[in-house]
Length: 196
Ligand SMILES: [Zn+2]
Image (cartoon, protein in one colour):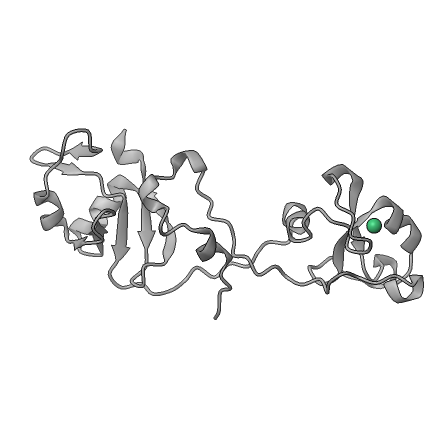
């Protein structure tokens, strides 16, 4: 049902915040908390002017008792500037992504199964399980390094391990994404560093 489908929510600066249902998006527009963005023209409408646009053949639409209106695919909040502050969670998946499935000692690229997570400062010596102390290592390098620091083992990291700079992935299933969101949900946007 169209009302249960997704609408992209932007803040006042047109930065993606999250998604909501079409039903909720319409409520926000009716209550003047949000305006509706026309994806083709970038015109911003309040609920009244949006409902007066009418519905062309084949356009996704919703019917209320008295109205037949186009589905709002993108809304812009009227009074919210914040960017969601989420750090990239330290997960196995994200660590594999950060290190590009590559051993951080010898640079060999491998499969997920053939790589393990190496604690740069070994756990037995107080090394923490953090972005800064964990890297991917191939079996050969892992065995060679053993229970030593890279310096002790005469090995060198290809790069200093850091918390990744890419933003958290937008948790919208690809199947649910609308074509009109593309200009907002871009790779460039999601790779940009977030500041406080
Ligand atoms: Zn290696």
